[in-house]
Length: 334
Image (tube, rainbow, N blue to C red; front, side, top):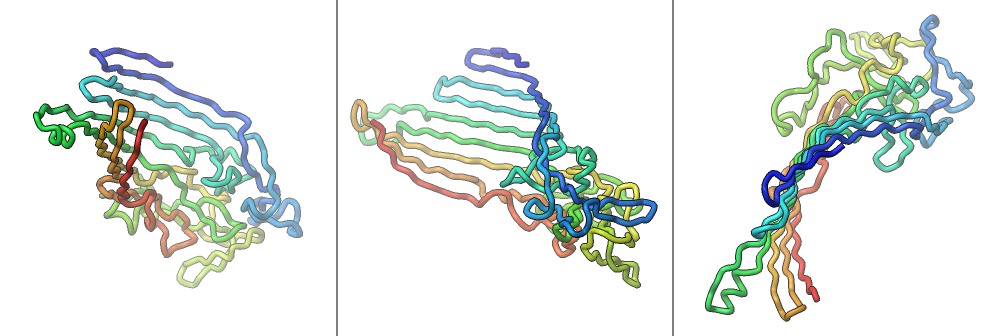
């Protein structure tokens, strides 16, 4: 559904709702995923230990099913200025929410979701690519022509153009996982008494060493060694008697929801300066100076979300985009 209004001459405002429902979508199920028996307090392999219980796509016994579903809802607003007086622009804002059971991988559609892959409906949550807010403005401006008696002066000061793209968007979601190997790929547990937003406060740069409150989460890995001081070392075994003190019998594959935290947003400005050089009636030269990530802003990636890697757990160690890039180009249009 879409509504349009011409506010004033050359200005068009659009508002619309865009939604979709996906059914019979692909997802991967591990057929020999260990099953938890609460009476025995142990995990057993339904097809036997002679067959692999690995949950990664490259190993184990995987079945690709077309059983997953998704939902997308969004409010989309845009303001368009048609070209006049040397200026045109398009500004668009989207408020959206995308939920699913399985989003696939960033490179391959087939991907092991951290959690219970048999009771896959427990994995419902925001899509891996969900962004709640996104604002983009693109513009083009032809600088006014100035009169001059000197042909050289006119050639230097006229026929300049500025254009650019401004992008502001919120971050993508992530789960807190406990994945020490290819057999244990599940979500972590909440620590006793943990509550609140779980995200630390301050700017992203001030939170690089702890983006979320890491003490709020504990291991869900079921089997390992209980240390004398109360610690626990996961063995990575998928079958056997559970001895982890922080194991949740009601949620054997972790009690934290899928994709319930959101990473840092991104801000970026791309800008270009263009000089046109008329050479003949149908021939025109063009010189471009283009600046990608004009302000050289560091846009950070999501933090390390694997509690099985304590050295970097909760830390942001990479960026989601590159530094400023400047390039020059010459074109001949005829």
